Length: 157
Image (cartoon, rainbow, N blue to C red; front, side, top):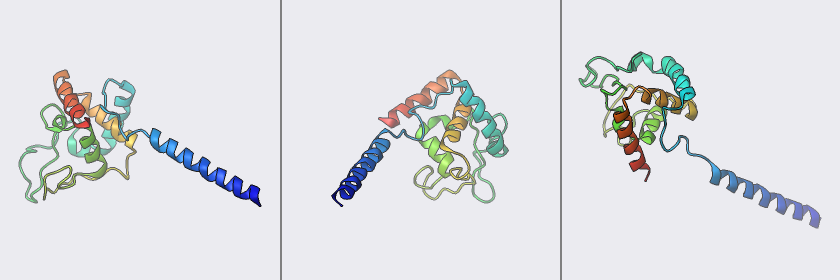
């Protein structure tokens, strides 16, 4: 009887220790800076983008026409993700959150903002979202990429 209690106690300590170890070594859902220099990641992201994003944001990341002018329903068209848009003004954590959770008023969008941007958290894995962002960023000129990296690193500190 004592040995059963001893074994149960040891098992509880072992399971608790393993859970603590796993939790403490868990990586965030995306790296500090999503680097488009990883060509394999960019190729993967391009295919995912083609299947999920191109209908609104365009094959060349150009967005919808007149993306700064509200539609009759009050919403804005999909913005470009190339250097002419504002995507690169945001840190990677925010971009990741926008793709995963959609545009949430007061969090990833201004209060009261309505958008047609769906949440992809139930459709894409975290790794696939990172790949799409790497693909998008692979199109940016080095100065734009550097500026976005600085915004990302400042936000992480």
